[in-house]
Image 1 (cartoon, rainbow, N blue to C red):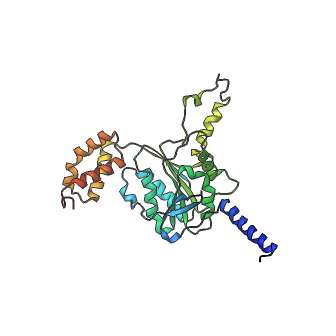
Image 2: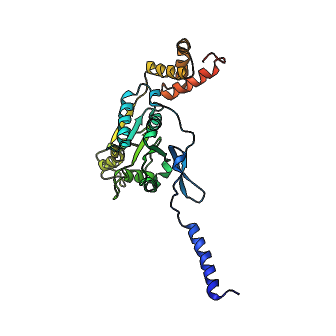
Image 3: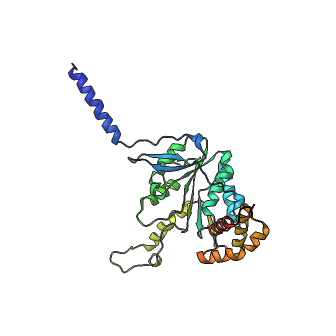
Length: 294
């Protein structure tokens, strides 16, 4: 028969197990040999972890056309980073489909053998950036935290978390971590005509609208390198179409024949972008008779 002490210890152990089950758990390190790219994910119960990406986009820097200055700038910045030299966080903004996200993926493929790793983080999980940085801070690899299609509405928690992670915490940013973000908004926050007012008559209005404007641009200013992307001209668009068609095995004659269809495709989409060019090339090459694009 169990003694009172043994009975107490059994109950205490059961209580500790229940308490541990509801306490937040520290993120576990993944198997770093599984790949070069990871996603930050939440399991059931709210426990976050790094999930290896087994099928990474194979896009290369040479696949990206008509953005030479942007490509040169981010390639140089990333090279400095993997070599352990000073480098900047990067904000890529501008027209949709012009290669912002693809450029970051291409940088990973370019420098993966040099120790570069990519961690994709959704906007909803930005509040956990300190946990991610702590998880990788002691690693020998160099990590880019990738935030795609980033924009915020007023009051979102991720805004301040990213602002602090970039430059605002009492702790210094880890020297093996940079943040690369893409956005269609240069200032990442919605801007209104009222922000430019010098004063307001609204009883509950902002007495210092200039300070409101400063707050809205303060996040983007914490990125050391800004890269802007613009809509492509017609010849630029057709050049990209030709590149992708040739990558699918089309001949120069087939590329020339596809020009009219490519322009009509762009007109139907209301955009001449690299993404639209890629989508057209897949559609056009895929419809060719077997062997005619080889």
